[in-house]
Length: 161
Image (cartoon, rainbow, N blue to C red; front, side, top):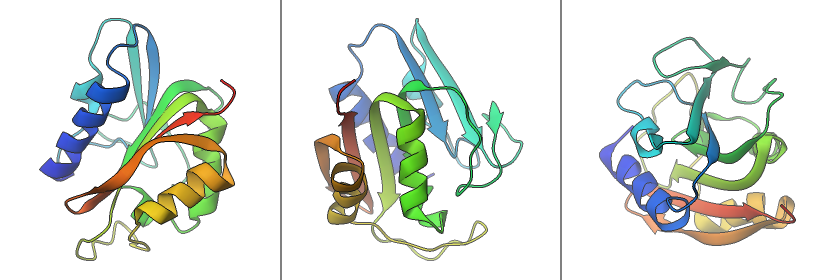
């Protein structure tokens, strides 16, 4: 993970989530290769769990691939950063986010970055694409969506929670 993505997650957590007293958090793509978002979620009464498709540091739940999960628990907040570009089926990824989310999502993905296969690199995502996936397709209420440096970010609230 690059520093700008880490800082952006911190800004969105501070702006939208920090005042919530009790929170269950799931990070999709949590393996710590070059840093982790986990430090943004170390508060009393916040329960953070990391999920990834392989065993590693900061991984509590292992799933088959970014395109196929088997997570049977729901979380108040689902986050993901620097993962969506590695997912073949973005629509299925977004549906799975919705399936495990009770209240909020924060998604960060590159809008420009060199190819970095891990193991594949499929997409660069812009705000219109994020809004389509989460607002139009899944009916999340967009709290904020935009560009910041090499990243596109989306903060949404699940309708009807």
